[in-house]
Image (cartoon, rainbow, N blue to C red; front, top):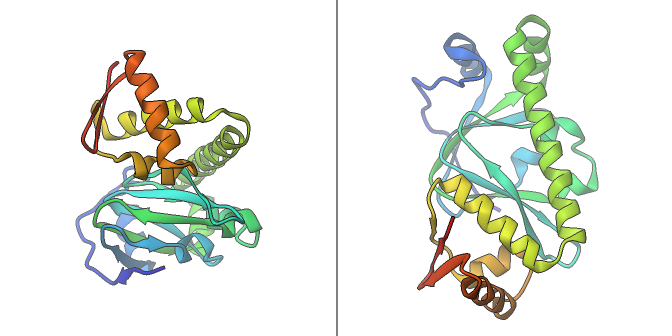
Length: 213
């Protein structure tokens, strides 16, 4: 898994902690740059640092023992990836990686620094607490959903999240891409999408799916 490192990050404010604390945080952080399509795992597995996305967009995936990938959730600008802070040695966490959906910038912040900031700044405490809650909730939700829901339900849930995340009703994805993210086959996904189209839930186009709200 690869990435391109070291880029300038200036003039950016992490909304949760404000401009001054962002400026202080950037001084002690390692800057990272990812190109579209890069696969990244080290920032999730680093037990000494936590990752904050400054710009762009990442998708988090879980890979099982059969090397099947399952989409977990998106990481948006200003969000802290708290997985490395939770339990980096947990086998489940070691099976999670990210893909850059577009050119993205982020920083690796020393966990010792964050722990100190939490004790003196309430905004840092809220930031970390919110990240813990959101990512653990997302992780448990998706694992439970992938284990116990039918492929029909998983597909509908996936398309709804894609529509919400991109804030538009037309999704630029091929049937094969969706199949890869849901750990299924293109044939199964194509059949289910056609079924949803006949139900009036969407319209199928070449490498596009229009969700009918």
